[in-house]
Image (spheres, rainbow, N blue to C red):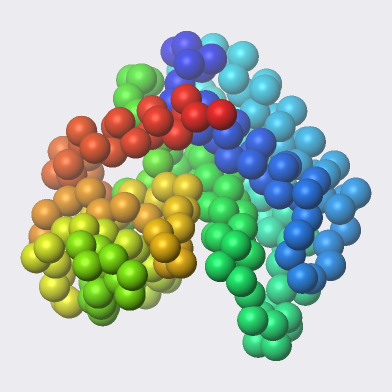
Length: 231
């Protein structure tokens, strides 16, 4: 397996680089231990570097100590970053820019801690292997306040919840759809945390990782390649 060009590893690298940038240029209204966090992220980068140049099959990669190290580092980084956030978020009104930064950080941590899971797809070099696709229930549908052709959804499972901005016209409350967890984007003041990548699914897909055979792959593949190639 050419681990140097595997989409999972390339997207993980970008997530860690983004996290490093956010910590270095910290601008959120709660304190962090920047030195400690920078050291933890550096260790995560080093672990990914060793994985990237291992040239091992996916099943062997999963057994590397670096994978467990990444998971532990991700949890440690999350604890350090957000230990002062919970108390602050009930007292501080975050700006749209600040909320986007928080969403970006959460996405980066998701990518770090879920890397082992994505290795289970095997050795093929496919863009869709680089992200998690989960079945969620649509909980609410509203018009975007500043765009007539967009809708704002709340969707989720018993464990996860997402805000999603979409241009799908016929989407309804109660439907189960597959969403790909991608870097968050702002659409005129609303932050979207995922992208819908399927038609209506059976209800039993809620909360499950959705097989690639039943999702709309073309748009997802192009989006992943766009993210990886962006500077």
